Structure formats: C-alpha cells, structure tokens
Image 1 (cartoon, rainbow over the protein chains, first blue to last red):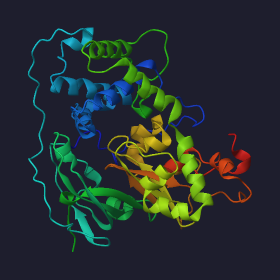
Image 2 (cartoon, chains in turn green, orange):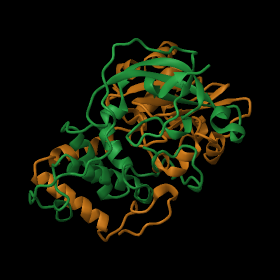
Image 3 (cartoon, rainbow over the protein chains, first blue to last red):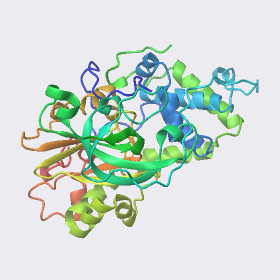
Image 4 (cartoon, rainbow over the protein chains, first blue to last red):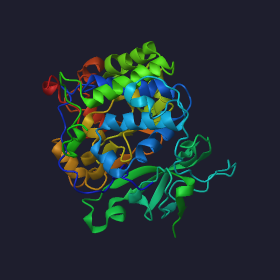
Length: 210
Length: 214
C-alpha cells in the first residue's frame, strides 16, 4: 500500500523535535501505557501477527494516519483487528460493554495467494539488483523510495516470512537479502554526500540489474 | 475529536492532563470490554507494562556495547551473530527478530531508522523515543542523514561514509559507537555509562568520561 506510512524521502514534516534522552518518559499518558499493554497481550492470543497489525494501521485513510499520534494509530490498529476478527463489534467499542451483535467486517485488500518454494536463493553478495517497480494496493514492506532503483546485494539473510502473505495470516518464507543503495542512485543530484542506504528486500522485490 | 496540533513530532494527545480526554475514555472502554470478554487478563497487562517501563531499557544495550569494547572476541561474535552474542550476556533478543550489530569506525558512521513504522531493538533499548517514531525523522534521515545528525549535535566529516539502515524486515539494528578516546583505564561497568540510547541508534556518539552525567 502506498499510503502515508511510507514516508521515506517525503518533504514538509517540519523540524525534528527530540526531547533530551535523560528526561523523556517511556509513556506520556496512562492511556498510552494501556494501549501498549493491550496490543502486546492481544498478540499473544495468536489471532494475528505483527504484520497484520501493521497492515491495519496502514490501511487507515492517510489523513487519519498523519493526524493521529503514535499510540492513537496503535489504538486504531487494535480496534480494527478486533472488529475484523469478529472479537468485538464496532457498536461495543464506545461503551465498553459486550452486546454481541453479529457483524460482518468489511473486507480489506488481500495480497495474492503465495506458494512456498524450495528454490535456492536467486542472488548472492555483490550481485547488482534492481528493486522492482510496482504499486500494490496490498500490504508490502518494499518502500516506495527504492522502487525501480539499482543497488548491490550485501548478504543473503535466509528465508523469512513474506510480509505480503503474513499480513493475511499465511507463513510463506521467502529469501531475504540485505541490499545497499548509493544515495545518488536513490535521490539523484539531491543526495547529500557519498552516503548509502541499507535495507532488506525479499526475493520477489528484486530483479537482476544489467 | 481531540485537539489536534501540527504533525510535527506527533505531540498532541501525549501530554499529561488532569481531565480524562476523549482518548483516555476510549481506551478505558476498550480495556473494560476486553477484560469483560476475557480476551486479555489484567495481570498480563500489568506484567507487560512493568517489563517495558521498569526493567527493559538502554542499560541492557550499553552492557553489550561495553563488552564489545573490552573483549575483541566478543565484538567479533556480536558482529557475526547478534542474537547469540546478546543471549550469552543474559540479554536475549526476545521478539523473534534477528539482531545485527553495525560498528562505527573512523571511516563509517551508521544510523538506524524504520521508515514504514517504528521497528527498534526493544529487547536491548526498551521502547523507542517519540522522535524516532516521528514523521520528521522517518522521512528525512534516509535522504539527508547528515542534517539530521547535525541536529543531534553530531557532525560527520565529509570523508566519512554515512550508512542509513532502514529496519523494514524483522532484522533489528544496534549501532556499536566508537569507544571514546582516553577511556583505556575505565572498567567495563564505567564504560557502559558512556553508552547512551541515542548512540546505539547512531544519532549521537558515546559520551566522553567528563560528560557522562549529562
């Protein structure tokens, strides 16, 4: 999904405001503490995973995502998951009392069905690769700023659960690679200095670069 | 709705107040509902919150860095297999993630971000600071890391390569800052006090001994 969460390289968010490390509290308010605890406790029920949680946060309208504070987005993610999994109804949320009205959740965009594969890794360290250009409406962990860009494989990272499938509850391991992109290849002449960006990309995000 | 402020740092709704906000009431309602339905237990909530508020924090990562500074064999193990190395110090990487340590040198300066959400080595550093999760940091550090570092007071020479690590997968990055000069006489325990959270994210350097109390 190309929505507001995918913000690498965006302009206009203003200056960075960093509270001194020594005085920043872990939580700013009691409700943040509760949201954090509820999310972790619910994850342990095994009804969804972290990728499903991310997908629910990202699939809010961009204006909502940006307007919300960090833990408001967590709260929205938890509430949406509870409704999607029919563990609570939207009507129950405001009052905090169960009433067990049946409710069919609205479908969210599903990724294609993936097959597990035993194929060996397609790439190895030092290979030149290109992050494929695409714009999927489903959950992905391939940010926009690398799409269509060329880089070099730094190392093979083993087979890891593909986020596209994991967000919908399927465990489909796929080869994962750490890829280095030169700043100038990502940002062109606007890159500052001869710096580099490292990111992990799943095999289907990559194609050989000539 | 709540009193939304600007997008900068996502500060609204994160202030202390005596009056329960609409948000606080919404969370209270959700908590009551989940407890009543038996979907979560209050004791489990309390345990989780207590762990991340009181026990798990950057002091754990600082121990790992200090050990890497004084023990060359440990440093190599940490660079080769982060999970095994931190587990051997009794600080296991708990979240099913893979820890990768990256080392700052005279030629390379590393800095970590999660542009898509807020992935962070929680087992070693606790919960991330607000700025790490904020739009200004996530949007800018990938394209202009030097100006972000400068805002933290960290100037990086032109001939030093800045490496930005975007934590988009379940790999978590820990920056091993450079050991400050003039610390050869310090114990491992004293060295750990020089290693701040921001240094292990890579936006600052380790403190020099005189400045440790800052």
